[in-house]
Length: 240
Image 1: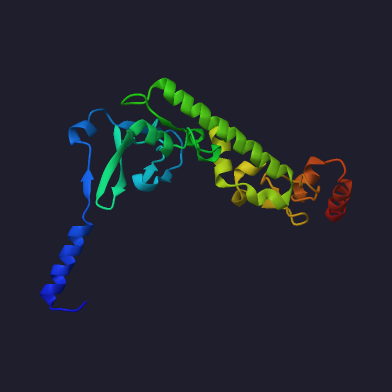
Image 2 (image 1 turned 180 degrees about the vertical axis):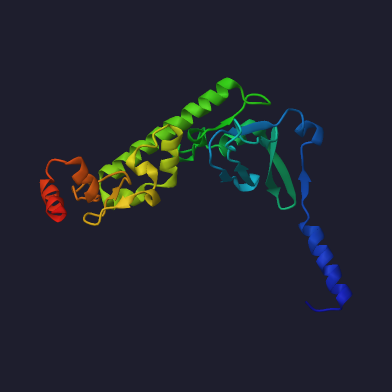
């Protein structure tokens, strides 16, 4: 930019003045006219949500020793800046409850995959969740857990190549619904691996349920299981 330092600074000030926009906002006393809309969570996962011009929101997980999470507060009236023309901006005002619904992914223009109510997230009607709201949230969360358990069952039944699809979330669902005895719910670290077919096998198993390979020969002989008589004879011969 030509000219002296003072001339360049003056030019910058003039450009800034020309680009300055008048911003019209709702008076503060009207913005605070009502109480904030509160979002709670009874599930174990936190949910970050990007809401465009409304910014980033995060719904915290519910602590294990608490009945519900810390509240996410959405203002009673929301402000969304919009351009009127080159020199003016205004704030588009809307209901905070509508923004709260968008945050949890329910209502018009939202897909089922965005819906956080299935994970135990909900908007409270008042300052604190009611027993009815908590019961409804837990019921929705348990339905999701049931779906996860059915999904993990199908992976398990499909064979060893599908075991990798069983996640910690599937096991958490089984634990929450008292189904920790399912073979896939114990976790890979707790399972034995069959050296013949590669299946994950319960640490209590003496025989692989998939290929019938003997994993604990001593227990099979001691129990004198039918179909494994050759092992009894082998042990008897070794004893002699």
